[in-house]
Amino acid sequence: MNKAVDLIDKLSAQRTLTVEEYKYLLDNRSPDVETYAREKADFFRQQIYGNSVYVRGLIEISNICKNNCLYCGIRGGNTNCQRYRLSAEEIFNCCVEGYKLGFRTFVMQGGEDEYFSDDILVPLIKKIKSKFPDCAVTLSLGERSKESYESLFLAGADRYLLRHEAADEELYSMLHPQGMSYSNRMECLKNLKEIGYQVGCGFMVGAPYQTTEHMAKDLKFIEEFGPQMCGIGPFVPHKDTIFKDQKSGSADLTCFLLSLIRIIKPNLLLPATTALGTVEDDGRERGILSGANVIMPNLSPEGVRAKYDLYDNKLSTGAESAQKITELSRRMEKIGFKIEITRGDAKGR
Ligand code: 5AD
Image (cartoon, rainbow, N blue to C red; front, side, top):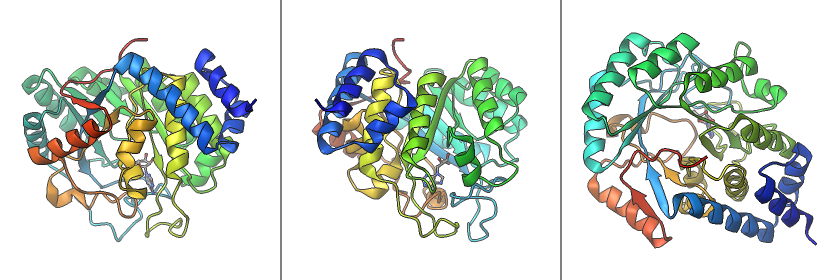
């Protein structure tokens, strides 16, 4: 018998493995094992979500960032990055346009830009939620104080994405400058959950220094933390970082991880990230077929999209026209899925 296949059966039955068992799976994946995991993932996803795919309108509100994460193209220390920030009015207008196109979740994502204080965000979130009460607002604005997370939640924000980046403290510190800490990251995630947000964590696949043991720990973290969402995508080097000569993370491995994560938590909202599409042009389809059930088309104004330059060759085609949404729907239909016009909250357990 194939031990990796047995472990996938065990994971399917018990939703838990040891770190060593996860590592064994990652070290022993083969096309057959990947196919087996994909079929299990598809089965569990189908039970809960049928063939629905949810869309999120992604609004990249600012690429100004006080942090200097060593892998990131918009890190504060990158003087080659052309900075921009959207006004509250521009952000609201993105929602107006997005609503017409059928989006019922808006994701405000940005660098850690101090301009976006609670005084700016609270009225903006309230305005979006009162104008579009049938929509969810997701924030992805990095580390903030517990008080700030509370104020934004009270203003109406529903979900918060904060990738944990690395569940191994040593790896975390190798990817981040001094002054950013693993413990603060974990504290933020805990706070978000306590407050009542639907929370998303996540990590890059194939990040510098990352081993299969690290990724096994990431899977264990996801299993134990129990997020509602999880964003994973391949690491892609950026020319203005010390990791510029590293190679990109593997799309195959990313897809295998998506399948495993789906099996760990069948009702997870799991996006097929654009970074997967950077590595190959059918990344989104592959991501969905591997177990993902969310896609996040870009609703940012056309003029700023290319500037949200996290990694080289990041896709910056948007979802700004009905025609593009139709095209995306067709791509999903071709692989047997259907884009839903709903908030797309997590179902079931
Ligand atoms: N490659 C892939 N993903 C990246 N991110 C940042 N830089 C890169 C990169 N070079 C991801 C990180 C972060 C989010 C803003 O984007 O995981 O959480």
